Image 1 (cartoon, rainbow, N blue to C red):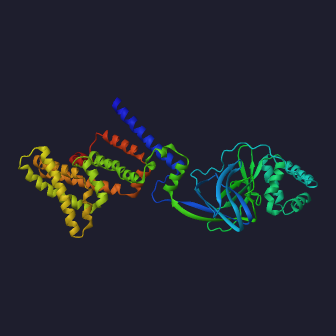
Image 2 (cartoon, helix red, strand yellow; image 1 turned 30 degrees about the vertical axis):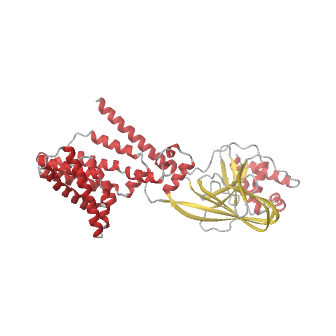
Image 3 (cartoon, one colour; image 1 turned 60 degrees about the horizontal axis):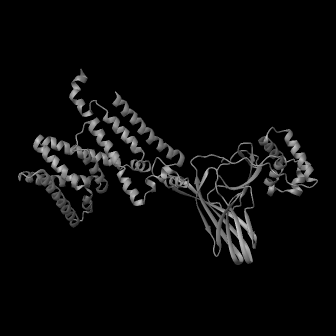
Length: 509
């Protein structure tokens, strides 16, 4: 009872570890469960144009860093005859281009690629902002702004409702005279976001302007759009100052949060920044691996993905061996199909992946048939076991070389793949079938040989399924679950399917 408890506890532990790691990689990093899936990857290109004034030029451009809902894949800074540095200040990252002497029209490009994050959190944790500084307003604009704040505060309960009420009044077609005064002489429709932020600051409500773009494939020469964020005491909440709508807008990529100007230019004039957007697709597996590497995940750093590509390809084949072992266990212990050993069907199935199934079966039967004939002759020489099996190995090598040469002369290229068959396994199979032929008769020997080929063929078909190949390589921790299933089958003591025919008369009764 103690041993049975231990086996079931071990099975549970293996399933929990293997399944937990798989779910973690899917949920956190977005590893795909199905091969061939692809995700959108967006490219935004910022084009900066200006006229240099025949002297030193310094251009500092605000670039995105962390955007809720998106992960940056790569950046590209394109400029001719300019030096480049990337710096970070209290507001974020800036790209800096500089040159000793430039004159005439200039063009600089910045390109960023990004894709959807797995977890669509609309907010990132940020420190609570300081109390906003009230902007200076001279009379009569100060009185007009204070009157507006007092009136809005009467019809609101908190920061969010205050903002909603303020936007409703500003978007009303019939504005009061003091609102029209502010719009006409102090602000305009183009900087309405700044107007709202200034009013909120005078009301001691933390707010900021968010600059970004709505993602749409094929857009060209677009300016950044302004939205407003208001701090409600826990999170920064989006507001559209044009529509008054609250909430994180869909497909909106944040380029800049408040802070300094988008472009600071020294040594030039007539500057302009425009943006173009294009959408492409990349395989989900590559993007998931990039997410994991960008987060410096230890789980990925100490995994197959950290190996060189050559070694990854090798393990991609080796990780299919547990699938073959599971097929052998199921066919042997549950179905009751006899095989010539445990490893021979697995290795033959691996060889079929290189030779393909039908050519592999044909070449296997020819080599084993010819080897049995030669083994029968060697048995008459009364050789000892080790010299006899060594002789069989040499004969197998000669047969494989002869078949390869013969197939090339006939123009049959599939014959060259015979070298993928394991020579030692073939020699041992010939020896095992010969001994069984002598001791139990030809029927038992042929039954085991046919069972081995059938199991090898089934293993090949399962291992060759692209979903199985994808899962074993992408989630190697699933091997633990396969091990748990094999342990569970190993604890089975019931009848096999092939044995049910022996008791069919009892079933009828």
